[in-house]
Image (cartoon, rainbow, N blue to C red):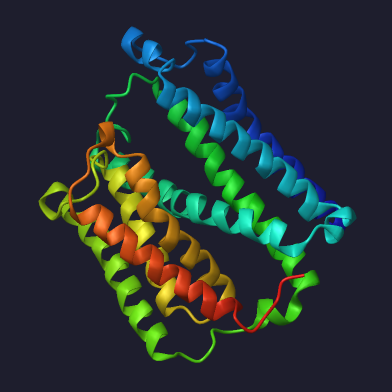
Length: 279
């Protein structure tokens, strides 16, 4: 298949993967109860927290579709590099743990028995298949499209390896390694290790393990592309866990670890970009 056609296929497939989630969020904003199992959960969708969250995620999906088009068609080369790199980096941080953890988690959950989600939020089981299945496809599609775009536009950076470590970078690597190992401990021990709330099932704990692996990749991997995805996961994992905390309750470990890891991850991003400009 010619390269241009392959890129069109990936773009079209990924845009289609965005549409079910986008349609579901718009339906909830319009007052629909589709996919909502209980009346209490349906009423909760009108709470300010959920309305704002749904509006934000609709906006994120629309941005994702715009990114895919810019990364696929020639006019995207005229878009300033940072305007593509930053949102793709954020998307990588949010979606890569799902793309890595969900397939493995579902297999392990099937072996262990039970359901992948705790089921206490009033949503139908098919909602998770639509949402998280779409996230996996979006992660693969967006990162694939960006990889092709980056190799053409910034070939030297794509082949680059991390810069020589400074004392501050060594400290940042130590912090990030600790954060990655903490996620692996959370995946195994759960509440006994003060893990974030809401990660109770085997599949959910596999997500924590996948996050830990990607965080470790940020600190230990050589190729810039792998480290780039890993730093995004490192910076965003903690804040995401705080935002999604069950009823807003978090222990002391999670916010402290989130702040330290985000600072360390941002420093590692600096080591990747300090001598290169994305134009």
